[in-house]
Amino acid sequence: MKLSLILALAASVATTNAVIPVVPTDRMFQFLQEKSSLESELTTWKQSDAGQFATKHGFAPASSSRNVGAAKDEELRRFFLTKLLIEEVQATNPEAVFSIDTPFTLMTEDEFTKFVGESYQRSSGLLTDTSSAVEVLSNATTPPSTDKDWTTSGCVVGVKNQGQCGSCWAFAAVAALESAVCLAGQPLIPLSEQQVVDCDKTSHACQGGFPGDALNFIQRSGGVCTAKSYPYVSGDTGDGDTCQKSSCTPQAVTIRNVATVPESENGLLLAISSRPVAVGVAAGNPTWKQYKRGIVSSCTSNELDHAVLAVGYGSNGSSSYFKIKNSWGTQWGEAGFMRLKRGAGTGRSGTCGIIGPKSVYPQL
Image 1 (cartoon, rainbow, N blue to C red):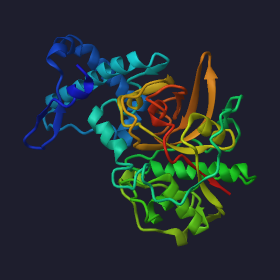
Image 2: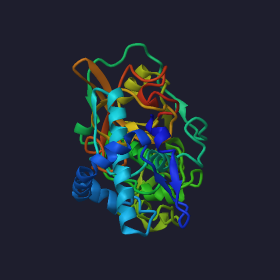
Image 3: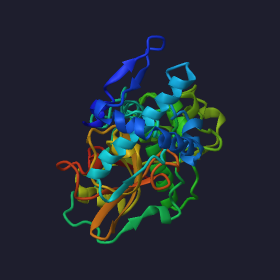
């Protein structure tokens, strides 16, 4: 039985209207048999960096029950179903490793999908964004021949954490701009996602947006504040705030164009060969939920619902990949990064939809 169906089978708690995941009948004996070891594993996870990160940032859902015993049993069910989910995803991704050692282990699949999907739920969306971007790269047939990893250039800010706010669009746009400014010869300075979340009225703060719109906003504004002078707080509050642009330290930036990338693997390779690129991906699925390391070759969906920064490409033996920087903290994935297999995925969209429409970057 597929986990997507398993997690859809749930019992309602009358006092809270919460939905509790139900262990399927054919797995109940296994659940009961392994309950003691599950308790030990769950305790270890809670004490781990990933577990503590989950608790601190709200990724360990509060129990729907006021009864201590029932609450403990609910956690064990969540933990057990995630382990089943890992088995399922691992079978379709032999070059990657999936683990309970991520911040999202106690989330159900539906909860995780909702968490990710809120980034675009109320926005114009990746497919119908309103940004005034121009396509400046030809759809060349010859891809770059060498590997590229911008994280070794000194022009990529470290992994950040968007927290409980659907602001991936702002993080991807700001990350692309941080790198562009550095590659233009200026110091690498972390810039303010919070200003973009609060002040870009073409987007929807923690309810979603599009990187192209964010870059257009910065272009119109003539720059963006530094992260130090306008720090990120929406990860804890889950909402935007009043625009405070006048009270921060501005970083003057002149964006000439917001450029889009041709919708092809070679087009994306060519773009990344010259700079990091903000891209859309399908991330609200089990593949991303429990990813730990390695090269992902299959996602259960190609529906774009998340934005990240493509920071390179390379190969590992016979497999070639794109490397992306996420905004879920360093406790997820390869210290906050992921590798997506090239030449894989559904149709022309690539693994997890990375070769989708409206990949963008700023031209200074």
